[in-house]
Length: 214
Image (cartoon, rainbow, N blue to C red; front, side):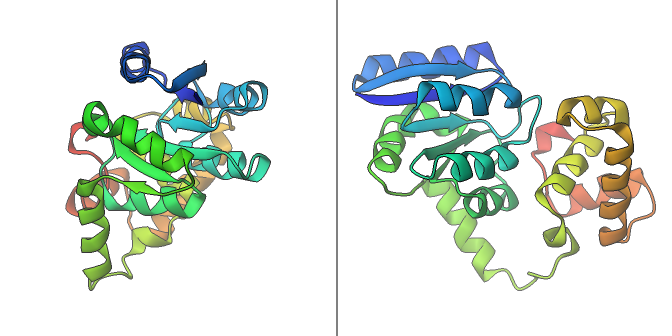
């Protein structure tokens, strides 16, 4: 049995994943975390072989969690399971230390094989994500300003585009509003954009975030 931990803040998603794993056999769900704060401690306590990790949960960002989990448990295999199909998320997740990347819409058909592959030490990318990565390598415009944003700046950017106020972003990331304001100024400076409206237009033009979020 492969010990698997699920990290997602939506109960319906967790139930669905548990059902898929239970039906297939060979997997033991040893823990379920509902926010970023719980993930690290639960991973220490449950000792899973594979973590199914959503990138967008309350608390610490998914990319930061990947880095910290890999630092604490180098043998741990992290399979990102998210709604984000954009190239920038795929690239950043693998750079952070993820072993696989799967969109939630593909989970029903690909989850079992994806977990099996990463648990065995391999890397898994769904065919759709592989195409995204291949296209990104052929992109002639690789010096786009948003590529210079840090993972935390990109997370703040995403939340700003969603319309979250600074205080809500601060609570979600477990930092002060002043810190969020600093991140906001940094990312606006890097992108050379004068306002939040310009940030939204830039995000739409470059398709940085899922269309359903904007």
